[in-house]
Image (tube, rainbow, N blue to C red; front, side):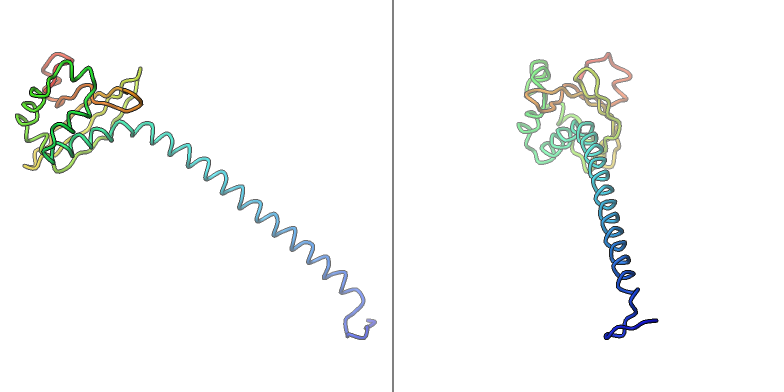
Length: 169
């Protein structure tokens, strides 16, 4: 091998440049792949979040309604009801329904998992656990008013099976 003054063989600088070039290309490819994977994951996540947000949205007013009842703020609880509900059920009747069913409305826990939205009406099935430990299966129907979901109808599923459709608790 011919050596130069620095003790490096003549062919080595070309190999170092070649290795450096491949190292740079490899790094750029890895960074591009990381960016692509991040973009796909973000877009997929937004799609899932958007779907979840749309389907789960009707549960929020139900939870807020129950929280207001538990706080004794019946006016606030009534505000989560739709205009149609309010036309059919006065505030005083609403209070009677709530106070007449403490095993349902004085709750410590609620769970709503089955949500079906058709023709602008969300039907939400779940259960409410009263402070006394009673678990009551419930169905709520909600409708959008001024961009917000409002309670149109609610019933325990046991009496819903026994009563005509459309009757409240």
